[in-house]
Amino acid sequence: MNIIILGPQGSGKGTQADLLEHKFGLNHIETGKILRKIAESESPLANEIRDTMNSGKLVSDDILDEVLKEYMNKNVYSGFLFDGTPRNMDQYDLIKNILIKKGEKIDKVILVDISEEETIKRLSSRRTCKQCGKVYNILTNPPPNDLCECGGDLFQREDDTNEAIKKRLATYHKDTEKVLEQAEKDGLLLKFNGEQPIEKIHEEILEKLGV
Ligand code: AMP
Image 1 (spheres, rainbow, N blue to C red):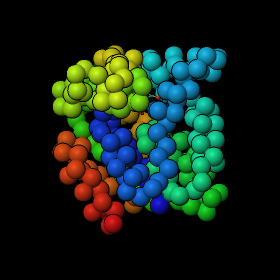
Image 2: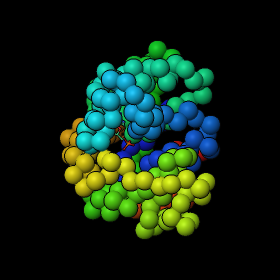
Image 3: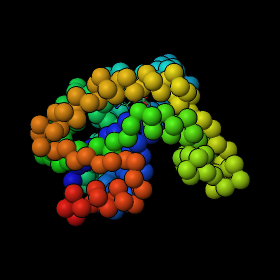
Image 4: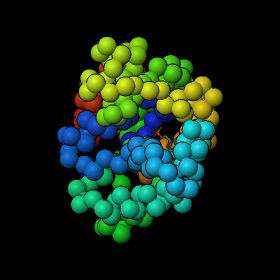
C-alpha cells in the first residue's frame, strides 16, 4: 500500500502519518525531516537547502528528485507513506513514475485539513526537541518542565515565523491544492477535518481506508 498524506502546515498530518506508519509498517518518507537533516551539515548543497527552508520556500524539484530516489531505492519495499510530498504536480508525477517502475501505484491520498487561522495559531506555538525531534505545542501539548521528555532542549523552527508561515501557505494554495484536485479526479482523495482530536481522525482514516 502506498499512501500520500497532505495538508496545510500544522494540520497534524505528521502525527497521523506516525500512527499509520506503526499500524501498517510503511516506510515513512517525511521530506521536511530528511531535508532538515541534510541542512545540518556543512556543504554548498546543505547551505542552499537551509537558506531555502528558512525563508519558507520549497527546495527545487531537482534536489527533491535526488532525495526521493535515493530514499525510495535504499529502503526495502514495504509500501510508502509520503508525508509532505508531493507539493506540486511535477512531484506528483515523479512519485507516480518511481512507483510504476516498481510495479506499484498511489493507492490513496489523504488530506488532513485545517483553517488558515488554525495553521498560524498552531505553528507559532510549535516547539521541536533538538535531541530527538519530538514535536510539542506549548498551548495544547506542552512539554514537561520546558524540556522534552528525553531531556533535550526545545527550539522554534526558523520557518515557523509569521512571515515564513505566510509564504508556505501561499505555496500550498498555489501548488499543492492542484495535486489535491488531481487526486480527486483520479478518485484517490480522502478528506478529514484536522481540527478534531488525534484519535478520532485516526479512526476515521482507518474506517475510510477500509481496514
Ligand atoms: P515541512 O517540515 O513539511 O513543513 O517542510 C519544511 C520545508 O522543507 C518546506 O518549507 C520546504 O522548504 C522543504 N520541503 C519539504 N518537503 C518538500 C517538498 N516535497 N518539495 C520541496 N520542498 C520541500
